[in-house]
Image (cartoon, rainbow, N blue to C red):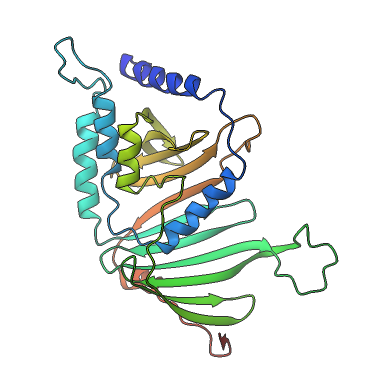
Amino acid sequence: MSADEEFGRAVGDALRRETADVRAEPGLAAEVRARGSRRAWKLRTAIGAPLTAAAAAAAVLVATAGGTPEPRFANVAQVQEQTLRALRSAQNQIIHERTDYDSGYSETWTDRSTRRYRLDNYSTLVQPDGTDTDTRTPRTGPMHRTQSIAGVGAPGDVRYTVVDWELRTWSTNHDDSIVLEGEVPDILDPDALRTAIDEGRMEMIGPERVGDRDTHHLRLFATRRGYQIDLWVDAATYLPVRETSIVLGEDAPAKPVMTNDYTWLPRSAENLAKLDLVAPPDFTRR
């Protein structure tokens, strides 16, 4: 392990020691999942530059005797420059996001340039039909699509189409409310990330493999203690590849409560069609 990597690990170990006696608050896992819902209902008008902020955090961790910040990570400047360039060049790309849960997964397609998105939810849980005698444990079945949501517009002026595939209904809605931020941060939200950096809750882990990709691994400790987010960005494109959400503490789940995988797609007719949502003609409008 290089000196730079040892330094990065030492910073992470210090953060972990500080939070070692902290248990996750009750309901934190549910809040993490709720964050995913908020992300789907709130179009990201700009992802910002998460790695730019991460690079800045790494750079200010060490200073010379004269007080001038001196980066200890050899690739900080490269990560900063390449990430900015990658995000600018990806403004017109379609972002595909898959989020895995215990009982299913969701897929989201986002077009930031037109403020459009579509979310599809899939689950093994079966919609209650009134015949269940024990409602404490939901029945399960094959994986199936449960609901789709398509939205267009900026936060505060978003029009939605919602299709319920189980109830065979659909509806439209105009939402003029501003979505409030939750206690669990969104690592793709530059404001939330900047707050975390200002409070000294981010570290750079180093290079890692995710599937068949070389990536840079970053870690964020939440505003609410007892929770962390890990982010991997492609070492070649510097675009986000994977994000995991982990609740810390003795009683916390042994695995991430949420895992997001990102794919950055070209602006083709096929990919743009993923954003369209039309209910089948035999569905009932609510």
